[in-house]
Length: 191
Image (tube, rainbow, N blue to C red; front, side):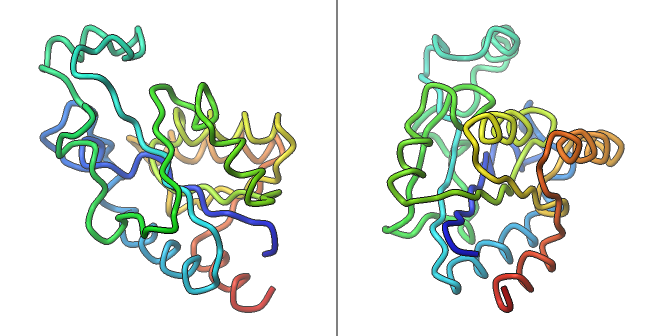
């Protein structure tokens, strides 16, 4: 999979822990597959980009649709707090790029496109949370920027299985490829 990068989106504690107001029900269920995809990408020498939400403590940069929730709950995904951290098994290596975002798409108002182009990336493989928002928005922007896009069906997650399935079908209709983690790993081993 030449010119391909694994892009992991929002695998952060505030999405993975049930006590968080942003908890995504399928998050804990996909964690093992995300770890497996990450380990396989690293073993294959594939570039890895961690796209993570980070907000200012004042909430000035929180989406309008979540502003009231941010204020009511005392904040979430605030930079330099435990909620923005990835689980230990996903923490970036020194050579891996971390892109901070404040909106759904990893491309919106970030340097993700620049970083990917500098790495000569033409194809991105998406893993992470949450499929109808951040995975889908990142996939749509990537397709608009002429990247080939693969979404890992069992290394991405939503609040429900129905939401997950309908979004995967929509992204397939838009031109994204949908693969299971095992299929991705098999391709890495035998392209």
